[in-house]
Image (tube, rainbow, N blue to C red; front, side, top):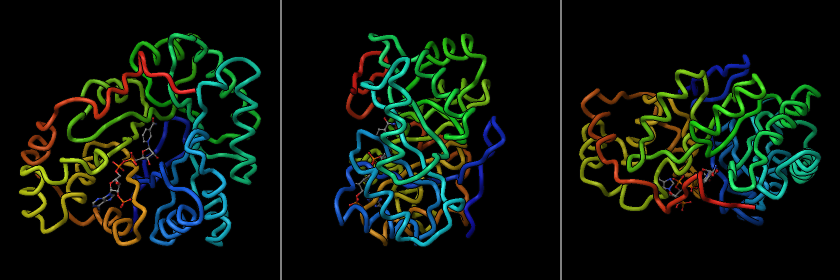
Length: 276
Ligand SMILES: NC(=O)c1ccc[n+]([C@@H]2O[C@H](COP(=O)([O-])OP(=O)(O)OC[C@H]3O[C@@H](n4cnc5c(N)ncnc54)[C@H](OP(=O)(O)O)[C@@H]3O)[C@@H](O)[C@H]2O)c1
């Protein structure tokens, strides 16, 4: 089944599901990203702090695909926040990947204590105007962070990539994104596989559709309108996770899965979490 697209507020579009690369390293990491591309993923999510941009770049070159067929995302860490620094961090990502532009570049965390995310955002807009980035966005931004950058810059991020899974469905942020025209991306969409895939509610929903628990959870993301970014090192699971476009969950099943809310996985509160 072809992967549908989501149109962004800047006119660009993203596939409805992407591939997460956190913790994929070395030759095995390159092989996993390559098998994901061969399985059909076109949206690839990395970050400077994942220390695997070189592996992602190698997989892109090995795939033999035209650059224009792939949508590559990376993220700027805290040590590069602020005027002058942002460009340096972005250029480091570009060099690691061996690319001459990025499709989507995000501020990884807002780091409100150091309070430089607004200047950082303005620099990202400048890099976009130079054609080095196709779409600019943020990650782990809350309402107050979003309101500040939008009111000060007049530019609405195309994407906010946030923690989102059945234990943390983020109803409020999804509603806000809908109002502002921001596309939600879900990180840890499978809750890193912890209890969620064994949860009796998820197992019952997946059994009812003759799919796996991971497929039921990823389908829930699709029907919420978010873009899930599942990571798997294994080709069979990569293919399984893409195979979610030929069944539909009922409203009751959607509510049952959203009803599993219990909180963040590890306490990554955007107001206090610091990642440099
Ligand atoms: N913006 C941010 O701050 C942020 C933070 C965290 C993550 N992210 C992004 O989000 C992506 C996804 O998050 P994540 O990697 O933390 O967790 P995840 O995608 O929720 O879960 C990955 C785990 O699930 C397993 N898995 C994958 N498919 C499976 C299947 N079909 N059946 C059973 N198990 C399966 C994987 O194992 P195997 O590999 O062994 O298959 C791995 O252990 C990351 O890779 C990264 O790109 C962003």
